[in-house]
Length: 563
Image (cartoon, rainbow, N blue to C red; front, side, top):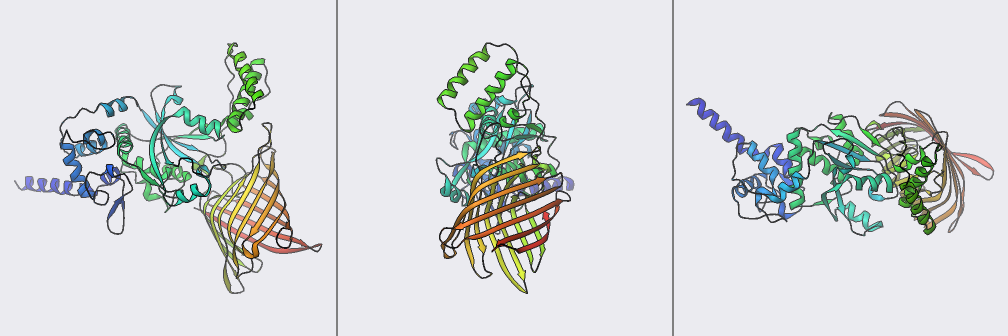
């Protein structure tokens, strides 16, 4: 009798605390707050209790009650609770609850259409020409049975519904949660066409080590999210990366992925967090159409020549569009190729160096000892031209929220706050010319006491030589400061050299004043050495040519830590 009472008490206690279990909190997307809990879901139809968004216990009790019924309808699909919240039902049945059987033709038909055997995490590399994709993108691929059918699989994507918004409106709404974010399904071939072909982005597919029951729970939960809610979308935290990890946590609450992330998250973090947790297998590399075309050797047959020309037409069609004459030539070539039964020759593309889990940390802390100054710098994301390119696009730069302060002769002052510093070096190659550009804006200290808004920009062309170990760039450049409304325009040149662990970068710029005086010739020369993915050392100097005399502006040695 005593044993029975103890066992009954233990069961009652376990059920009483069920609302605080990781499994339940993850299924309703609760996050701990200073006063309790709050769900990240923002659609009212997702909650069955009046205060369910902030009360896990009330939401659990309301869910149990709703699942006992068979006639009342919920969600956008207007169906019984068991048909709208199948993941909650699976979870509660595992905990010993029983519910009446309910026919759910919509859910059952949807689920039968997804014969998923495995899950893959897909990382699309960065695309600098779109603000929403500058950091890359992550989504899940639902692998079906059979070999050679990957393009027919479905993918799980989370994205903001932005409509036709762009520019400043797009940035502001994205930063402050002005868009609704939704989970959605789409055929994988659509994403391959969009990313691989249309935007010339590589894809890395990582197998995710989820069990079969966890995959079932993930799909059931995905149905819940599609059928009843949305999430306010924020660029820096509640974005695609965060929501994909939350979905995986709901499938297996023991993973606790979001506890391993900083206060903001970007797509590369998703891969690193899952890899460090031991949840990913070896990735499969899917090169962009551009890389595939560039890897083609000299054609040996007329068929290979046709295939190369067709691929070039497809690439130019997606990147720039085709003229009417090119469209006609493309159509004629397609007709000619259709009459040739020879199978296409496979083009082998070596895996690129932009595998995201092998790169340095996306945040950086730097301490500098200079000639007469000390400097501390913090960068919140993610890569610049002198960083080691392993894990990133070669010769790319995306610095976001970079802040530095100097100490000189006992005085400490803010040196700069850079909101964004982007360099996009599209090489002029056999595919033709595409513009290279750079853009930097934020605030700079011009005279220790005068912080002012600053803008730097340039448009030009670049070349890559010696297997991309050498880069050259020429730009028409401009610069503007809010201080005295100063502006200038001129020219800028860039030369970069790269080895396995080292880089050297030199820029020369000359600007002539538009609203104020000229800016003298300025040479920036810097070199970096990467010890590993966490530590690097840099040396730099800045020289100016004034009245035919070279005058040093500053030089220093900097220790870089990536995390």
